Length: 310
Image 1 (cartoon, rainbow, N blue to C red):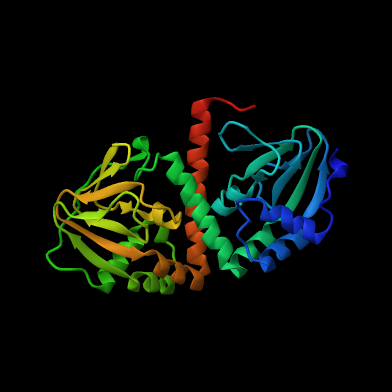
Image 2: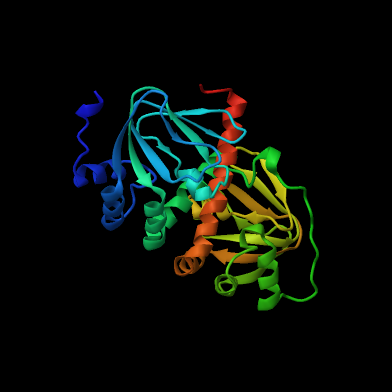
């Protein structure tokens, strides 16, 4: 019975949040903030919680029953017990929003979007965990390779510069990356200062399978041959950000990266980057929006390949 669930107390709500992957690693203070503002809601069959074209002003944790949610132009999806609906869409800043409808008698916990946004800004642990979960989802979806086979960018060797780039040149190049196109200048300068230019000779190994993923590289010139532990291979070239998902996911390297030619790249250390993100929230928010959007698209493509779920 829906009314038999014992989640009325703050402690019970905190324990429930602690059991969910999206919120489990949070500090007690952040969990308490979310739990204090959560509202228990009983939904009648067919009741509409969110509509397409409107902002996502709530996220929902399904306690009993089912919710049906749908993005613009995508197939509907069912969410069951302990699933979180609306959180990734909120993170992605998807202007189309989602529609959410109760399939039958359904009990949910509502989390106001403004409280979630405040918690993100107030507790960097939520940001770090969100980046980790998003990166893990993308790694799994693309088969632990640099890119899904049907999403691998066209190969380009790039242009070999005669001299190493200075800070200003690296800053300009960073600004060309879509993720950083609208980033605050101060934040982008801080991020660029934490990077360095590296060169690999033909045959040099950037990393091997199973090594800790503590950095990633933005390739400026050259070809890098990547081979998974299952023998699958991909070649990546200029403008490719290589190894970032492994690092953000805090997972061991899933593939070997070896220079086929001279490779010139910008190296970004994970901890240095996270330090900049902790200081500059809008840059961190941009990272989360980028990852969440990529996860939504990848999940939609996988679902549609498998057929409708409702």
